[in-house]
Image (spheres, rainbow, N blue to C red):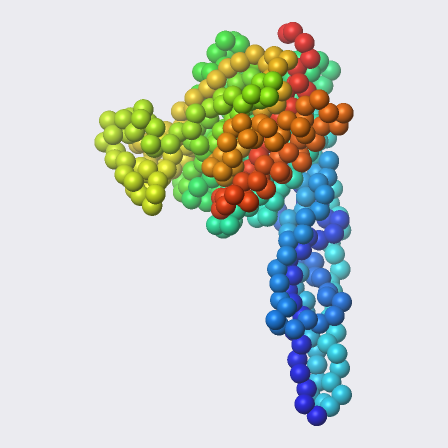
Length: 394
């Protein structure tokens, strides 16, 4: 009697109930790790080869932790016999690992920093006063990272108006090493520099923090670099810095206000600076590049281009006023497809004049819009609800 072999289809899915938030750190950074084994999913019935498909279902965001990475569900090979009464293939499934739960908002309150895990398909964080959504692009492994440090003085008894906070979005290129290093160290360098100076020298302190972090990373002797955008809140003041093409956009009564200027090689002042230093800029693969290589003129890292690609940030200072509603910080994976005002218009209904703000939903909608418009890059979006960090005159 003839027999036939039916192969179940592999499916990409999220493991149920697992949460692997970023590892907290104190006076250092511990790289988070992924589970050592992947849970197995067993299809209820075998499927023909023609029906093989790949899906990535999403689950609702959690308000207390990062979502678990996508897990690859691989059924065991079917067991069969060659006899006339061949049995239906039976599949075994491996027991899921125990749940690990570290509430992210609690960790941040304690002064820890949240750093984007490696190897994630997406990262979801809904913290107190901020939300983050990161989505891996279609070019390879995720190279974006983010960092959040709140209440850096460690004094929870102080009023919110005195709260210090440091936020960052980092878009790595040539690998994720630089973005990961900066996410772990730039906040510490910034606070160390601020503590040395009076309040009027914030811009100088941030400049030194960027340069110090750059020098420290170059000592690691690894390749790659990262664009950066950071926001520091200190006693009701907002200081936004950037190096590269990550961008920060403020909503002021619904009007988009860019607080940073992208450091593209095509920018006239940046091109003149590079050429004055003996470098050249050319049009390569549809983009202006330094030495036919990098499309940004400022970044941390990039050892082989360090003569021209500087880590000096541009910084803008402002007082947080009642009309300052929220700040959007994102990598160029968003801004290449979504304009500043479009971003503000999308986010505002989720965050302003509503009983229950949903900034995380707004982050995700922005990333989905950019992806739908054809972005192939990693997309990282952070929304900071500014009113949560000031409550009156200092």
